Structures are given as C-alpha cells and as structure tokens.
Image (cartoon, rainbow, N blue to C red; front, top):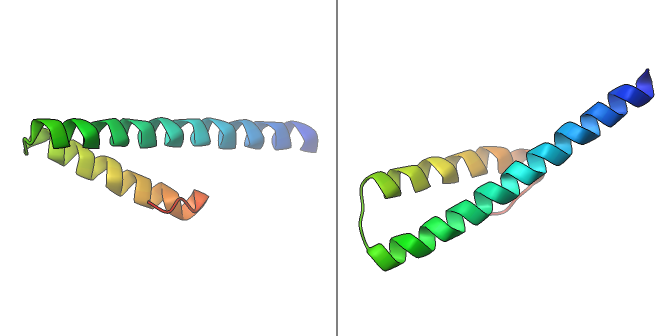
Length: 65
C-alpha cells in the first residue's frame, strides 16, 4: 500500500516537472516572438500570467527564473 502511494506521488511530481518544462519552453518562445513582433497587449498579458505561474511553482521546485 505504501509502495503504491509512493509510486503515485513520484508520477505526479514527474508530470508536474514536465508541465513546468513545457511552460518554460513556451515562455522562452513567447519572449523571442515578443522581441521580434514588438507588440504589447494580449501577448504581454499572457506572458505575465505565465511568469506569475512559474514564480508560484518555482517556490515548490526552486526554479530561479
């Protein structure tokens, strides 16, 4: 029983890390696009929300961004 709980928790951590990596890649791509396009507004707001999300999650995984 304890082993199953351990496996599940490891799986959840793995999925979370995958999503964080995807978010980081997405934000980097967005930043590059933003520099190229030089347009504020919706893109900037989305980027801000993603960065805020990353900072909140960074407390858990100690991601310095």
